[in-house]
Length: 158
Image 1: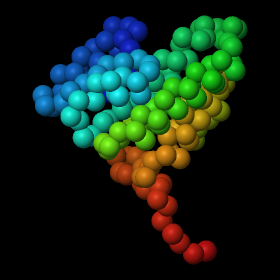
Image 2 (image 1 turned 45 degrees about the vertical axis):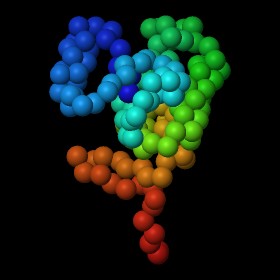
Image 3 (image 1 turned 180 degrees about the horizontal axis):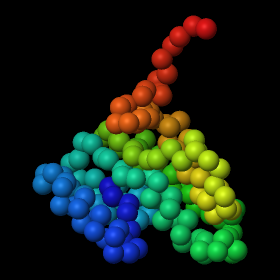
Image 4 (image 1 turned 180 degrees about the vertical axis):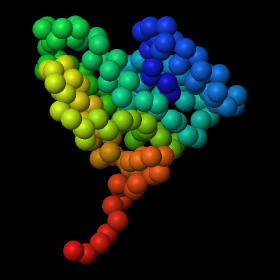
């Protein structure tokens, strides 16, 4: 499941490169939103579903409900749409007997964005990541290409 949208030429080229380098045996759905419904409708015989990526999925929703200036934002509606999208995806995960791999970015560990739009996006993506991580059996943070296990947490004594 690919969630990227080609909003400009550079992004179109990135998407084309991803298409070109995917293994030929993979079936790929390219959907900007309503990912859970699309997976349920078109799962076929897949045993593993990779959703790449939640970061762009939230961005796709964000762009539908905001303008570039950030002046006209219906924040409660935007929050509800992100929560609904992720809830639909979680429902899909719980209904299907397949393995899911979610790809996302952690954007909350850096500097606080300087503008309202950046802060809102960071917060909404953080909420989406939390909702998915709650449901996941395993969560890894990739650092310099190395997986750092987050869940299940290593048990240690202080």
